[in-house]
Image 1 (spheres, rainbow, N blue to C red):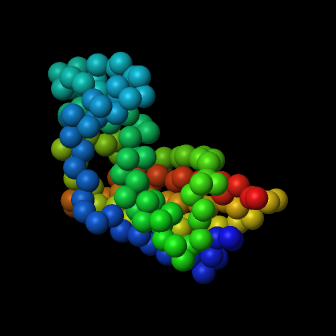
Image 2: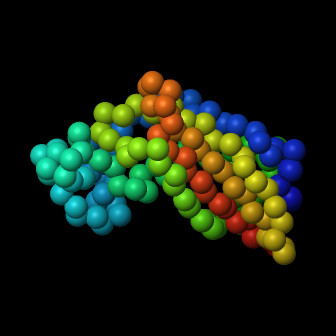
Length: 147
């Protein structure tokens, strides 16, 4: 089944804001096996000039999960998840993420294209803080393998 090109530009807002907590940052740092003390200790983070515990650079992948799951799970989009592999991930920051941030986000289908027998689906998740300021855009490319 081909990905429906009419979905290009469609947006999937996250159902609720995401609160970045010290615990979630610590768990993520442990999951990626990054022992940097700034991810688990407020004083270590402050000694480096951060106002609070910063999130690792790849942390926004979590923030994009809600919208991405909505998009991929939309039956009219036509993605066969059993054929999906992760192709690429990028992050564009306006500022670092810190414990205490509360972020709203929306995921947009930014590109759909065929590449040989495969299809490429690009999803962009923009996250904004409570003041409405842009914090980060996470771009994910999924490859839907052809039969």
